[in-house]
Length: 428
Image (cartoon, rainbow, N blue to C red; front, side):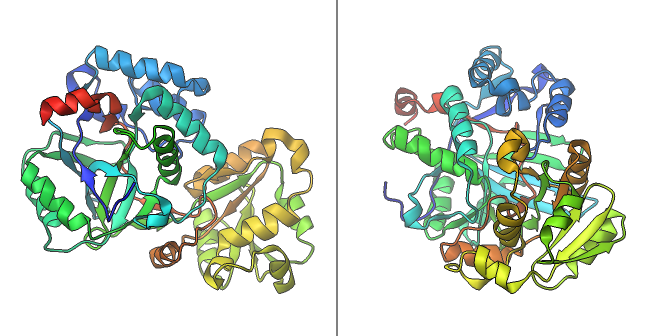
């Protein structure tokens, strides 16, 4: 498996047929790890019988049922594959917020981690990778694209192809309930596809969102000996020089620990200061703190935890990493607090000992209130810090960042059955 740089292959985009569903927006979903379960999944399932959440998060983790459902929807024409393979321009636009992001959807060649072509910046959880791999083994499909960023040539072939395609009539155009307008255009011209890849071959990409999907793709690649179509995976590649991504924090919920217990177990190792709500005010106070800092909450009351004891950090935080990594809020949270001061009793708590990860503060606070535990709110990490650590080969703690805008799941899928060797031979 030798890849000099990024290569993006055309594929047969699998899309919902508008005449077979209530509306395209109703069949979309946030990425699987952003959906708050079980309520969020239930809302999406009831919004439209064919919502993609029934594929990416099947009830009871029944992956065989998800695979059967995918085949049924394809056989009945709910989902159909574009007859010609292509690259696709995907646009997300929010007029009210002034957000415009465009990128290229395609099947990216998998490269070994040592090649440094695709740079992860977070560690992954083995059980999540295995669960996602099980789903992909069953469905033989890339149900959601990864989000990757790179820095391209402003006047290069990729930028030109994206802008030229966006001048035409889109294949699909829909507005999701969050006010985001999604549009997709094809690039079928082979010479244009080739020109895009000439440029991409000189670049590498940062995984902005989808570390578990990337690890899953690499695992399946190995299981299939690197043979097509398992040698590629579906990505949205965004030129961050033209469309900078936003970085937000991912918050934690600790079901086994009440805020009172958390404060008691600190033992003076952190300064704990009660701060007034509402959440926006408390988060602003967190944002102004110097050094590692966290916001501990139960959904109503907030405490700012800062000024950790240097002796505690020296004893609990790995010293073989750069100082920038050792000072990350997520590093301090997991190394010094979750795995040290707050860990007693977790082993006896079963599933209640599992850290929950929520992508917005209201959801984290609501989950803490529902479970009777604690929410820990974090600050976003700068994109420059993320890229600096990734380029140095240093990964951050799991779920340290939330890059966006994230592509909506359900707009474009990649079915590996459409890339069987005999079909590819027929098209060449």
